[in-house]
Image (cartoon, rainbow, N blue to C red; front, side):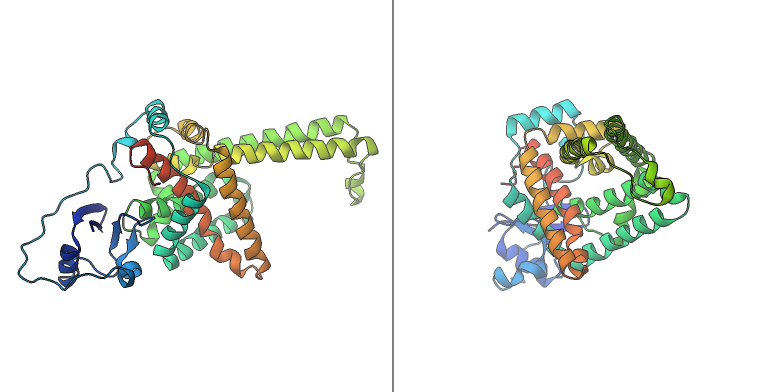
Length: 331
């Protein structure tokens, strides 16, 4: 069996069962060291897999193990230097190897590998976004100045872990320190698109006879009969449109934080890599929604534990695309 292990941001290997046993004996590999072998869905801490992977006794007379970095497996891999067109072409040639079940399984294994740290950091990021949104004046712009950065930071945690890198609590704030302006532009674009959608939805309804006369008296607005069917149809169209855009631009935040491209190119990149995978990603979104709904039924406590799965799934979609484009299909 060939093993790989991580030291900081560097991934090393392959090594044999005997060599891994020797590294454990001399404390080079500890319980928290991330390891991987063929058959694993993602990199996991040694303590998580030790029981199911027996090793031979350490050999004190064995020669030192040569340190061999894994070629093209780090965050500086060639896929980050490709242009959007080059990435799409490589993805087209190699195929996008991901599925609902496979992606969900890898995302869950990733989440489990640092469960409490992931839960704590995502919870902190969510609280920051919530509090910022409730502040006077600041709350009006929280969707531009805060939310994109906490969202990107939460996904960044899981992407680093999927790449076999050590994760720290401070990583959730990477969006603020690494590319604050770019993510603010991402948030601004989303805000403008949302306002445009609202206008496109409300104006036709006004033309259909929707009146606002009741608002001044504190009563619900009067809805004329001829406007009711129009409201239902417009609401359905708006919902479908929002879902479509959410799927096609789902990796925009992580693309902005991971790549050197502009904010506009982050959206373009997301559009390109989700091409042909709409229903796969939609299926993952539906499963995530059902998990969140189940968490809400559990007195909201379950929702707290489910929230990090959003970051884990988005990171896994992006990571699977990068691995596939680089010729390292995850499945």
